[in-house]
Image 1: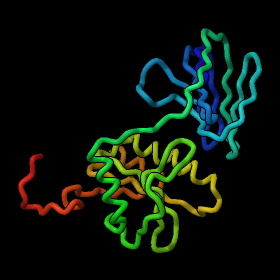
Image 2: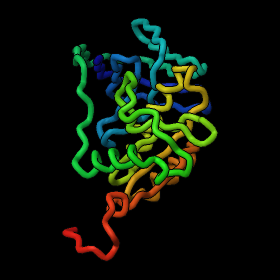
Image 3: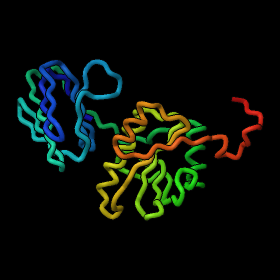
Image 4: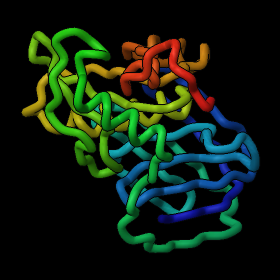
Length: 219
């Protein structure tokens, strides 16, 4: 991980054009080549970013980040205030809570509850940035990447987006579509997911584990 705090301006050119005027920001370069630019606020979401794979060309005053799609992110450095390089090693990945892990397990055993004709290829399908919860094939034999959450929020949609980008690097998988599955999907997350072509599915956890509607429940 490389962390640079600098006064900089940023110009993105790709599907659209966007400019960040001069200000002090954090530039983060991850080991896989992902570049993200953060302000001092706004939680996890960067002001601008380029997902891996990327090529970075550096000079004393400018970084030019390009990707295979032809998008470019030009970072002009006016003053570098701090720089840190640190090796993180292999991350063990996110540990899901009990309900979320069990929900994933139940869906892996009965993928047709998400969509008729769906069949499991693999649970915890490995990628360079972490495992995809479920990878299935549909009735047309198309690959379906599935992110499973107890509560579906925007960060889960972003996670699924990154996984699909990694899966697209494997040409043997062919076309890939995404499915966002949760007990409850927040409206903002649904809008974002559907704008990216993902199918949204809400699952009743109690019904999935065989609990009848009229049975007593602790919560």
